[in-house]
Length: 314
Image (cartoon, rainbow, N blue to C red):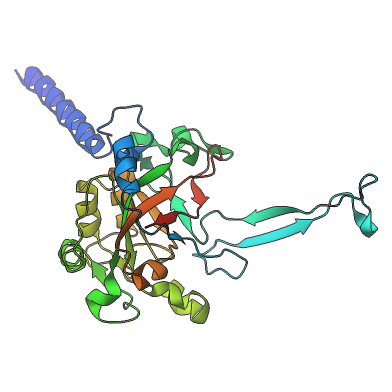
């Protein structure tokens, strides 16, 4: 009898263990299937592109990137440098009877500087990434074998910007200020806009002003999206969330939140892309609350992130 009870206990223990593993895996599974590598970009459709095109009334376009250079403030240990070279042209040598000459350039630096998109292979939870991809299986030194930015389709959809400086009544929202569902809904209502499935949502905090004028403060913290706000936007079916900061989420982190847990919520749990270093001030100055958002990403095989210059057209 004791032997049978021991066997039963072992079976129950194994069943509980299997159940725990299954429960742990549930959070990372894509609703678009086991082979999905593009996450919330699945929401993008030709119909959304057509609807976004109807938002264009003036034809004015807004480059949403900031300039990137060796002076760019970057989250450590990221660095950046650019070399311009003239191969085979030492001493002013030219080519052919037409005396051709040319310049080439070499970038030596981290991709996660300036205006960038975080791909789904950027941030995980305990070495597990979007759609249950384990780091040991796909993160190789010469590039990701899954979730690389080359998989991201073009974004042609509706974009909206929420002016959080107006919400808080200040030119620069204070570091450590988190905006969650309440703040998002209230500011959207003030601007007369609704956040919809397939949207790209941008936040304007004024923080970008500090990049060159007060770099230490710019990098020490920031206002930003909170944990609840990230989950809320993901539930609404947005494709990407961005802001005029280097890290999107609020720093210092909210009480009870982990380190860069907003990144985990958006990227790993929901497949929602993150856009950092967005130039939102011109949109806010024109009260361009909704617009056609267009983004084509350099298809660098296996890249985790990409330097970007999205365009808003209204």
